[in-house]
Image (tube, rainbow over all chains, first blue to last red):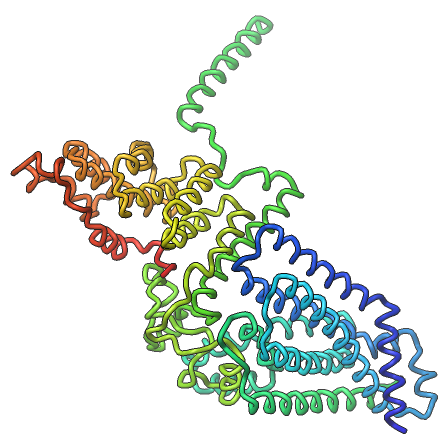
Length: 258
Length: 319
């Protein structure tokens, strides 16, 4: 019964993404990737395989993160802003169901966008005989898990701040998390013990998006797949972090007077 | 009276302005400010220029990653140096090229406070301990040099380092390196770094074509130089050109030119030991005709070693 509700809500988010031409944008971006690869081929592609793969995973990661943030951040705020939340909640749907359905929808829309982009990029690269290894599949899987994490953070932030602020914060966290982690690492050794504890706490709280991106192992040769325990640990981490974010958002949404 | 004085005053002012302009032209010659090009006066060209400059710089950084198969390396921050970590710091620019002193961006386990997060990152990223590490073939990065010089023909390292990599190829590497540098020279006429590298290719390789090398070195060293207007890389290239020119003169038996060149170079690089040695000809005077007939090979290693110690050069990026 519940699954039907979540499914309908998720379908609504996906249709909304199509109606808003989000997927079209992704398709056009994918086409541009193919076009750029074609231009690269025109000027000579020999030896540029590593560069092409490097560029492809960077573009894939960047665009799919933006889509994830846009779709997840606007889900609830648009419902409240357009007052379509009232007829929804007038039905036998709990706030938990609404939030979870929206989250699933955002994740599905993001995954669809990501897979479209990945397919277009894959086609473009295969024109130039770029070889794909098993690590590529692992990359796709871990990236999808990572995008789920981005959606969870995006949706929760949209419940505690305005839509624009949520998008901006999500973008900063998503694209800056690795940089922040590096800065913490550099500052840790020279920091006083009290600050070291703070650095550790901050690092534990920050979403570790960078860990889900194994693009460098895909681009450069000879690295192979990551060990299975790592994939398992990352999946468990994503489930725990998404759960924590979801509970945080749900608590806020429950207290919210509508 | 006043009516008569006014035209005279204006005429005087005009003459004074004319002479002032003439004097100012001498004192302060009209020069295009460094970097002021079309891309800084036109918005569209500016955007395009910034894109190509940024993109070629990005490609330049990627070449280092190519050589290390994706492993990112960095220098230590000032606070890390103060905390007692061993390595090369941000302020020690001369040793940035000494990779044995660089650390990996992803820290090894013993330097990482993140616990399992650190373990996972090392397992999911391109990471390995880089003590005594090896490198990928520089040729793998060659297409990047081609791409960056195509995008931004004014990006000098793309030409010089690209030629260095090309020159290492066994079959036709020398010719391709020369062609690459000459293409660069066509886009950057008179550039001291490109001309210097062309000269080194001819003088330092198996070719030992000192006369050809001098056609590239001489225009550089004979110019009037203002070191304050040269970048660090250009100053290094100029010093190298002085050394090589004097060496070429020595190898071709032109000892007077050798001494003059070295002394002229010492006017700009007062403390340079190589030029100091070249500015004297003690052993040659014993038998002045010996070298002209049977030239000893140029001790390339001694020059390179001196340059490495005294002026860290970008070429060291390529191994």
